Length: 86
Image 1 (tube, rainbow, N blue to C red):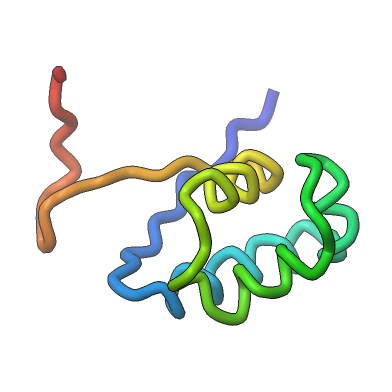
Image 2 (cartoon, one colour; image 1 turned 90 degrees about the horizontal axis):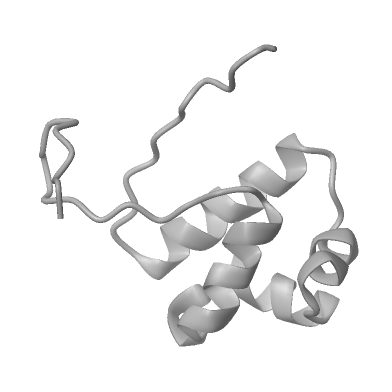
């Protein structure tokens, strides 16, 4: 089975998050409506998240991450790829 290459995008602003989510969605050939229906959101909610996620709830952000098979990783800026045992 072919393993997915891990891609990392440092995100420091809500606008960057929206752009990255939109990029992943388009890369997978999905429409906003398709992604929204996977997790029970409206297409307009996905559009709002992609345009400006600064007012989005964490719940909606995590739903969209799940729909795109993505995860959130928190690390110190400029940190190496060392993983904590927490």
